[in-house]
Image 1 (tube, rainbow, N blue to C red):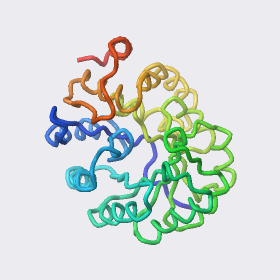
Image 2 (spheres, helix red, strand yellow; image 1 turned 30 degrees about the vertical axis):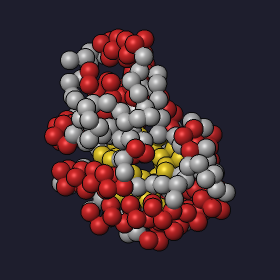
Image 3 (tube, rainbow, N blue to C red; image 1 turned 180 degrees about the vertical axis):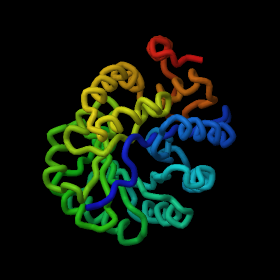
Image 4 (cartoon, rainbow, N blue to C red; image 1 turned 45 degrees about the vertical axis):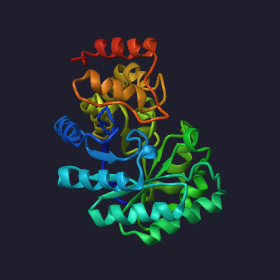
Length: 296
């Protein structure tokens, strides 16, 4: 049995930016404190929501090290160090391990579209070159590549492959992964609108975009389930479904950075090629957040 790195909700945290596109570390610190004070169980730094694809290698490692140092053990810090280049992923992962990350989040190689055997070989190479637990990240809508349940099973045999962030949207696939792997591969939802459904299929929680603006609710949905309070968990999921879906009216993280600004933080712009939402989507996000009493 592999103990999960965390249960509940890990925030797929935004990277606050200054208007010139540099990282706003002062606001980042304030936002990390807000997360920890409001129930977030782990910080996932430099993932999709953190705009890792537009951070250069130096910035990427700098953000991870800064976050590890600033969090200072208050909650686990999981470093997004995946790449479509295995050598680059190994270098980023080794640096994050050296800097004290609690675990690594490794997205499937994108664009290359390797085979399932290639996927296994990619992940095994990173596993063998590092010394921290690894969470696989399956998001085929972004990467064009799906981790098959059978591949997840083979990877679960490696001692530091701790779990998988499942964002395929395919609940039958999630159930198959759990059937094959059992407690040898922890499963976290990568979709905020499927937290409860994934818990029903053996999940341990969520790596969440919603947590950026509603950290306590995102924590409570899986936590209540794990406490055996399934009806309360389902009711809370239903309550927050509209808010969760509103964070995806445009490409992530465009809506959530707008939303974080609306709750009183200087999230700043996204980096190109991502641009601001149109006015209709901005209005919808704001109206939805007002319904939940979140706009400052």
